[in-house]
Length: 75
Image (cartoon, rainbow, N blue to C red):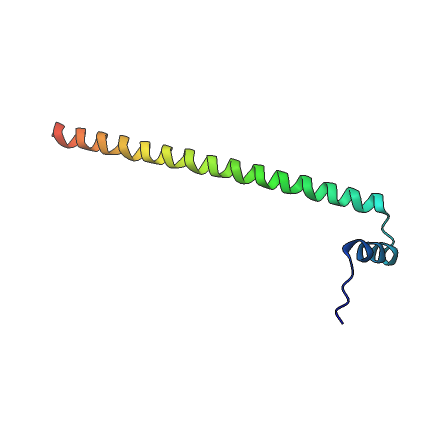
């Protein structure tokens, strides 16, 4: 026989053992969800920053190539 416990029973058993009230548990879940949202926002910001840095490095390389070519032609 396969006896599986439902998540709610497991939750209540853990809460009674660990002395965590439902309101404290709900607060923890709320904070974890907020942290996940913050992490996703940070990932998006970092990806945009990487793209910006790539463009800046490309433009700096292009500018350096133009200036070097100009110095070479000027000689």
